Image 1 (cartoon, helix red, strand yellow):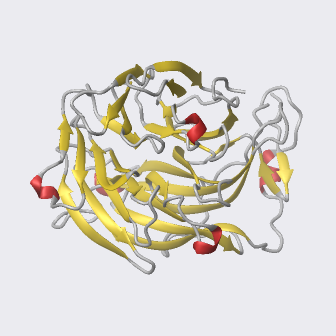
Image 2 (cartoon, rainbow, N blue to C red):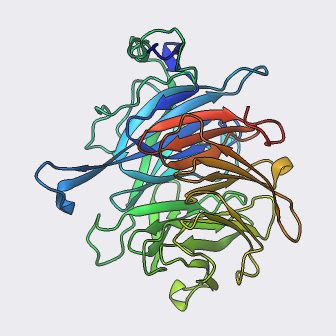
Image 3 (tube, one colour):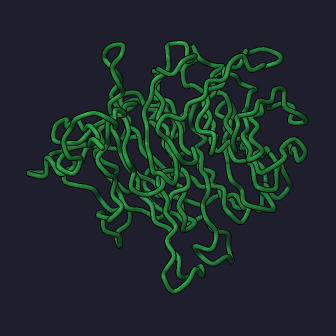
Length: 425
């Protein structure tokens, strides 16, 4: 078999897809103007000791991979991605950037990740020197599962050099490059619960549309609790924690149009909406326990439509809701696989376009006709080179480029759609 083709740019291997080393489950482009080309990929790997599989003999490892993505300059060209740094961390279930509000002069963008040890960790994106950094002080940055050299999609029948040679290029004098710098960490397990016994499964920031100097982050946990934290300039503070669901709370998502409104979904098949200004022990504002036939995995409000929110479930359905009335969805579409992540297009010109990570069915782009019915007009399916569960997906802001990540084949791909998002190019 011919070797995969590898392009070397400034001493770093670049291409249209890459092997993330550990199992890939999240990809997020930075929403801040001036930083949109930077994407972070989260990975997770459960390791069991040879002596057995008891919980105390397991470790959950992860990495954060920072990648710079370049759009094609002309029709027919491919997206090019250049990895610049990798940080070793606890196993990562979800990553989210703080809101897009702000300019390059207002401080570095901040990234948060939900960790397998039950914590919320934050990082800044800024120029730094040297190689990869460790996400915690007691972990080294090098790992045997570091990402392999990224590769062009033309991985069959093409000539090219050894990826190993490309990945080791440029190891001379350290040059200032963009890096993720550890900022803070806070434990999100409930009081009285052993630290690390509950996993942080998802997170969201409440400043995606309305700026906030000290935004709130919600973290959903594997024991069904939800924790909210305030992220200040110098420290993080836990605000509240409550038993939101009876089973794993897979997802927490703020409404960007009303940042006090928090949606949660769980393995108990319930969709709930909370008012974070009130005591959560008083109960949710709204609850729907009948619509979903399996666990609720994904929730995202449409940033362009004030009362529109989408949910995804293990029952393979994408549902569109009116936030003022959660009694029943206004539209429902089959994605062909469990719906792990949903992302509305960030551009108002594509306000009815929804990106979907559909687990064993790959990735889908759903087109909705806005209006009373929000009927599905079109569904575009994409698998590409992915051979495993589709978990992570996101749009490159201001474009039709998509980043997608699949789990057991630890594969990250970048692909582009037509200007109207109707065809994969």
